[in-house]
Image 1: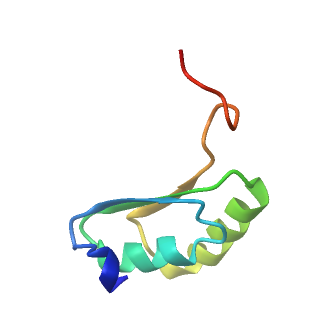
Image 2: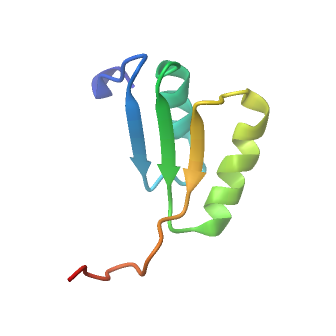
Length: 74
């Protein structure tokens, strides 16, 4: 996390968050900011939310991107 240079008030987007370990780590640092973990896998997001539930990190959420993978805007 140190290499990412995340500060207390940062807004962080973790793309491909999987089970959310990196998302949770970032949320512990960006305590006055916000952190969003995104993943295409609903199963991974369920597990990420389960693991995060007991940690009391109110500055973090997990989302599944909308739209189709590979779709291009026009």
